[in-house]
Image (tube, rainbow, N blue to C red; front, side):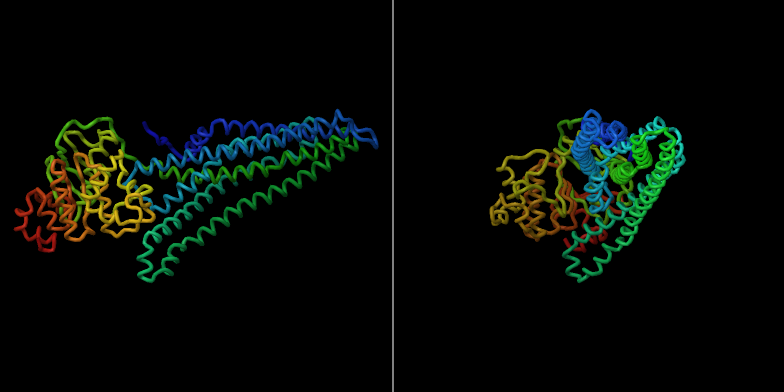
Length: 559
């Protein structure tokens, strides 16, 4: 089942986020409508109360109670609106973040967005977009007092309504320009913000290198270089908002002056009552008062900008998986005329089932390893496991049968044992410890403060120790194919030989694809796939290839 929404743009994404808020969005709309209705009716109720009061006396209770009820209704509606707004935003934000994270993980290694920028999009974009489910009905409801006020003014006296109607087109144009400008500048602001976050993440990842090189000041300047642009976009955003607010306030004051002037003339002529004059002034303010609408439009503009940045991630293609299971087989892996970028150009290779095949070459070896388990897809050709093209396999079937160990493994989980168990299924603890022994990781793990139960945060490791844990994790989850992508590069020679022994003997019935730049590892494999210029130059035992000086040059000429 596709768990990521098929979105065609920011607006559709916002609609889907709004749908996830369900009842909370409805409650926001209902409460906003109730508040708008109370706001429109209150001036009329006040006018009735004023006109019902005898000269020099207080109005009767029957005339006051409607005012009290409308104020209470408005207050209750505002409380419910605040509650529903927060809940709707939380629901929409959570859904969008889940969708983004799932899609990012589905895209996998094909993702070409800096990690810091990705973090900004996942953390900030959904938070901005999450306000849309509440902001949209509130913006719509915010227009109702203005519309109701215009109707009320027409009912009170058409001359007062005509006096302020001339400004309505200008107000509409003002709002339209605001929506356009605020949406564009908010998107630019978030983009610059993401650039800074991306550079900061890069700097944090290389903090030891920066400290060793003494380039902290230079790197600080590089990270903060876009800051003036961020400031400029922020100032533009506030300038747009402030300019619209100032012009709107001026329009409101002029309309109220016009309403008071015309209503005063109408009162002197006996065509309106004192209460209706008060109501006319209040309705004039409502008719031109678009402050609440302006606030919601600002939130919608930022929401659309956040949704646009999220959509840029969601439109990235993720590999689709089939539903097939693998038939019984030895783990024969076929690369049929595969091309991938500049690394591979029409490579054809068959890795016999149960064989240990070393992959050597100045380029293309890691790309071949990624294709073996469909971490990436080829631009051309296909990869077949035991007669089944990899795209036809179900995701779980593929991940169970093709395991990986990497040069720089990432560990996940609360403890060291959890890191070893990380995979499609959790093996028994005894098997996890046995895998650690095979990877020569058991000794140093036992020396940790709490052994296998040591939290990862309290288990600092060298590059070699990290590689051994990565190998142990791969051994614990081994299927019919095991891919080692330069996974022993940080190990000393003795440890590397011991692990190779385990790999060749303990897993002799599994297909092993070993990317290596060590002649000793290639010499112990059954076959060596020698890559050159993106193609297979030879597939033969190491001893047969060693006579070729070009092959010896891959390993520095020693073996």
